[in-house]
Length: 223
Image (cartoon, rainbow, N blue to C red):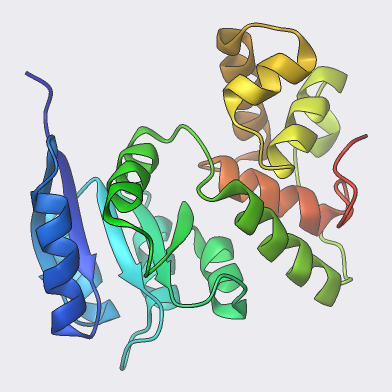
């Protein structure tokens, strides 16, 4: 029997936490193991329960969702953070992605999409909301023109660079496979090598690095 995905819900509004818990507990293979009302409680909860996924609100008193995400990911835990936001283009969301969040989701997302998102995040398979994530990263890449050197970029092969550009365009593994006329297993191998060479934990961090280094220019995601 496959183990359930263990989820923690973090939001300063009790009603929101209750709503998310009801949705997730109704899903097969998903279990809400804890709740917290602020970022400090979130880090303590992760220390204690080590959930697979944390649904993390951004705006909370004392320790906000960005700082909590930074603390959780900096500790090298396997727990992945899914940011919850009210607006799809939000500077705080970008900061959260830079802090190590694995993706983000709008709070008014339909229940079935929330469940799917948790499963995707837990599997580490793909970016969430690719088109919105791409718009978000592009928007703030424009507002931060200073480029940062990303170790490992020069070590990428031509094919791996091509795959990274496709990832920045928000393409899934299947879509990249179609685009490059290769098998999906081959794409997964390339993605894994990109992550390893860049020293990042997931696709979101690879895309952020691609923009911040200038490898990918906003509005132009093909080599």
